[in-house]
Structures are given as structure tokens and as C-alpha cells.
Image (cartoon, rainbow, N blue to C red):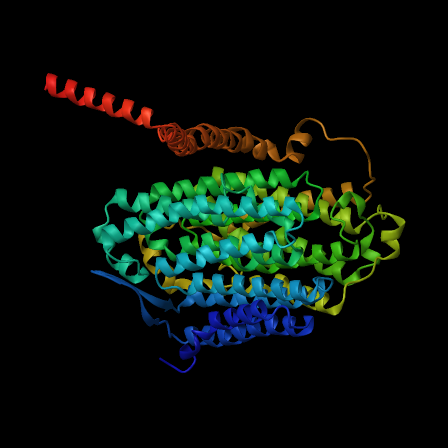
Amino acid sequence: MNNVLQLVWLIPVLPLLGFLINGLGRKHLSKGLSGLIGSGTVLGSLVISILVFLSVKNGNTPVIHYFDFINAGSLKIGFDFQVDQLSSLFLLIITGVGFLIHVYSTSYMHEEEPKDFAKYFAYLNLFVFSMLLLVMGANYVIMFIGWEGVGLCSYLLIGFWFRNNNYNNAAKKAFVMNRIGDLGFLLAVFWLINKTGTTDFQGVFAGISKLTTTDITGITLLLFVGATGKSAQIPLYTWLPDAMAGPTPVSALIHAATMVTAGIYMIARSNILYSMAPVTQAVVAIVGLSTAILAATIALRQNDIKKVLAYSTVSQLGYMFLGLGVGAYTGAVFHVMTHAFFKALLFLGAGSVIHAMSGEQDMRNMGGLKKYMGITHLTFLLGCLAIAGMPPFAGFFSKDEILAAVYAKNPVLWGIGVAGAMMTAFYMFRLYAMTFLGKFRGTHEQEHHLHESPMAITIPLMVLTLLSVVGGWVGIPEALMKGGHHFAEFLAPVFAQSDAITVKHTMTHSTEYMLMIVSVSLALVTLVYAWMKFSKYEKTDKEETGIGKVLENKWYVDELYQTMITRPIQFMSKYFNEVLERKGIDGFVNGVGKAVNYGSRQVRLLQSGQVGAYVLLMVLGILVLFIIQLFL
């Protein structure tokens, strides 16, 4: 092992140290020191991650064993890290984007009290640590520890402003819905242990012959249940839009660099299992595409700037799962990377707008911000072009790679996917036009305070803009540049066995050109239409009607869940509490006490102190004994 790989353990440990220092010393640290510790530890992890990435490029891909985590009979689970192409790439995404969000937070959260400021950075550091542990683990158990860690941190950060009970409810919703998915993950791990005797990735994949087709299908479906919770897919997606209750940098971290990418990573890591489970792959593809379309339709009519971006994330995650479902593992991971760049940019840009608007998030009360916020406007515009899939921005290359793979598998799914891409272009430029173009529609006081954000906010925006523009150039398809897809070449060893199993459909370059032209042209048309329609938007009190109202109310899915799941559970819990717990169990326990109390009061009357009463009782006792003796 070379010297760089000996430092791998520091990558997660540094943010963990930041969590401990800021968390334990929150009452004694200044804001500047808290921000420096929080950001500096993640920067240290980023530097080591870059060195590890370069080492992996040179062919160093070890599994590093530190100690035995579980050693019970024949079951041995080590605390091991797997350093390969996939994990090293995710390390760069998590630490790189995570560091920029930490720097951004030093300014965005400056109004918090010093102890709350330190607590916030402690939670951010713990979030990064958990995600790093998730992607570095060499077995499903270590991955699961990180998996649960990001779930905990999402709860802590979504409900960070806990004095608002709505934020607490959003945090609880995220936590509970993720626990539903996590049960599927846990059952899959138990199934693997039962059948293969190990949870190590290499051991599971090497012993795959021990698994029947039913085993593989069952395990992969259960793992996918976990992924639907963590990565917000149907039916466990409704927690993610509500997660906007947390501070905006938290939204950026959840949506871009940590939690929601966990499900994609887990399936990509388990690619061999999924390639041998065609039924599961079909389920993944259909659920992914359905989620992409459903979330895109909802985003069309949302007016909260963060809610639009939230449903956009759900939709883009659907495209990633669609790619995984058709065997385009490289394309899905590629979209994870590019999405991390432009979605972090868009969320942080939205935060810059909200910061300037004194907390306002309704786009109907914005407009005309272009002339007040030049840097935020330009970076946001480029981010919108990237997510809309316009060439040569990053989103174009990753999105079209997924759509091309889908076309090769099923042209009907491709057509639906293109429709989703058109909606993406529409709702993003509706958001852009309503926010930055036209006349200002807010209050005079808001307009008086409009200003560009400080450098701690704008510099991360500019860095992310650069990545959103050029980040896709590492994956230029063969049709456009021979040998230009360095991204696929880098990840090839991770997906080599799956590629050997999966039937690849060849596609001519002319077909690829046609697919690109069609998808880009249709997205461009909807982009221009949205720009023209909403650049002169006028605020109105007229309520949405028909399908517009349905979309504004998110297809009433939350209300459906409330009616079919939440309320019946609350009713049953109230029934069990009243009937079984209070009247049954509690009634029995209290009844025993009351019976003893009553009996003791009655027996006490026998101790009257009168000799005549005692003689009478003695005679009665003798008679009872005589009768018993007579009959026995």
C-alpha cells in the first residue's frame, strides 16, 4: 500500500473531529472559529480525496482492513474500506461540493447565535462523515451504518430551526419515511448473510453462484426499497420536498452531495446483482421513469423557489434510476456527478435570492432581480441551462447518455423520458424568468434592501458554475469525439462484470445524432416558450383551476397518504391507547391495587378489639372446621 492510501482513514475522521470539536465546544467557540473548523476539516478530506483519486487512477484499488467489527461464529464482518474508481469519485463529489456548501454557510448562517452556529456546523460535519462512511465501506454493514447516519443528520438539519413546529414535522416525516426504506435494506443484508455467509462486496459477488434467481430478485428488490426511501422515489418521495424546511445550504447538501445520491451509489455498487435480476431492473426503470414524470408535472405549478428545485431533484433522481434500470450504470453515475454540480449551484443561488429578499421564497413576489444581483443571476442562468440539458453544459452529456441507453432498450420509454426533459426545461426557465426578469413584484422595503450577496456566497456559486459548464466534458460520447468518454474508461473496471452479463444494443452514430437533436430541440422550444411566457409575469390573485390546481397541490398525494395511512394509524393508536392500554393493561394493574386496598379495609374491620366478636369468630371457625371434617 502506498503512502497516500495509508491516509484513507483520515477522510471520514477529519469531519468527525470537526463534529466533536464544534459540538462539544459550541458554547465557547466564536462564529469565525466554528466556521473555520467546520470548513477546514472538510477541506482536509477533499485534499486527501484528490490524492486518493490520483492513486486509484494509477491502478491502486485495495480493500483496507482496520479491525474486526463483528466476529460471531462463522460470521466475520470487518471494518473495511474499499478504495476503487466508484468510491474515489464519490469522495470527490461529497468533499468538493460539501466544502463549498460549508464555506457558503459561514455567510448564510451569520445571524445565528454563536452556539447555534457551532451546532449547525457540527451537524454538517457529521452529515459529511456519515456519507463518506457510506461510500467507503467495503461491505453492506459499514454502508448501512453510514446509511443510518445520513438519515439521522437529515432529521437534525431539516428540523434545525426547531422552534417552528412545521419544521419539526418535516424532519419527523423524513426520518419515518426513511426508516420504512431502511427496513428493506436491512432485510436484504440478513438474506445475504443467510445465503452467502458474508456481507463483503467482493465475497458476495464472488459467491453469487450460491444464490438462486429468486434469491437475487428478492435481495435486489429489498435493496431497491431502501433506495426508494433514501433517494426519494415513488412511493417514498414526499419527504424530500418537505425537507426544504431546513436552511438552504442543508437543502443543497441533501440534494447534491449526500443523502439522495446514496440509493444510486448502493445500486451502482451492487451492479452485478442487478444485472442478474432482469425483473428488478424492469421495476427500477419503471419506478424511476414514473417518478421523473410525476415530479416534473408537480414542479410545473409550484411557486416556492425551493419547492421547484426539490421536485426537480426528485425528477432527476428518477432519470438516474431509469439509467440504472436499463443497465446504463456509467450514465447514471455520470448524472449523479453533473447533477451535484448544477443542483448545488441552483440551491445555493436560490439561497442567495432568499437572503437578498429577506427570507421571501414565493417567486410571485420576486421578479427583476437581474439588475440587483448580477453574479447570482448569471450563475443561476447557466445552472438552468445545465439542468435543461443544453449543450455544451454538463447536464447535456449525462442526460443524453441515459436517454440513448433507454432508446436502445425501449423507444417508448425514451419518448416518455424526452417529455420529462421538456418539462424540466419549462419549469426551470419559468423559475428563472419569474425570479430574475420583468418588474419587481415585492414590497418597497424588500426592494430597498436588494443587493448582491457577499463573497462567501458568490465564490462558491462561481466555482459550481464552472463545474456545471465544463463538468460534462469528461464524458463526451464517441459519436462526438472518439476516445472522449474518459469518465466511462475510468469506471470501466467497476462495471466490467455487469457489462459482460448485460446485452448491449449497438447504435449507429447517426441514430445518436438524431436522438441528441430531437431531445435538445424539444427542450429548447419549451425553454424559449417559458422564457417568453413568464419574463413579463404579472402578479394576480386568481387561483389555479382544473389540472393546474391539481398540480399546485402535488396531485394530492400527501392528502392521500394522510387519509389512507396516517389517519388510520393515528385512529388505531388512539384506540389501542384508550381501550387496551388505559382500560385494559392499566385498568388491570390499577384494579389489582384497588382490590387489595378494598380487601384490606374490609379485613381491618375484623380487628375490632371486642372480646365477644372474637369468641363469635372462634365458634364460627370451629363450626366450619367441623363441617369440613364431616363431609370429608
